[in-house]
Image (cartoon, rainbow, N blue to C red; front, side):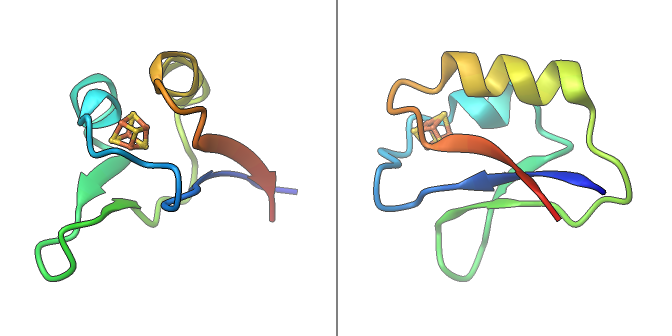
Amino acid sequence: MKKVPVIDLSQCTDCDSCLEICPEVFRRNKGTGLIEVADLALYPEDEVSEAICICPNDCIAWENE
Ligand code: SF4
């Protein structure tokens, strides 16, 4: 089973903290302007966990794929 970070965009306030901490995973979609998760084979657990901790709105979570 693969662990994938997901973002609840309804709670996201565009603070950009996740982009600063983990830019290889979190990025802003140039078309929609919304934060999105890059499609990676494997996600760096420590960096994603740090982004989860620092997100002020608790909108990032792990999901099993
Ligand atoms: S840290 Fe959370 S609130 Fe801030 S941009 Fe990322 S997902 Fe949105």
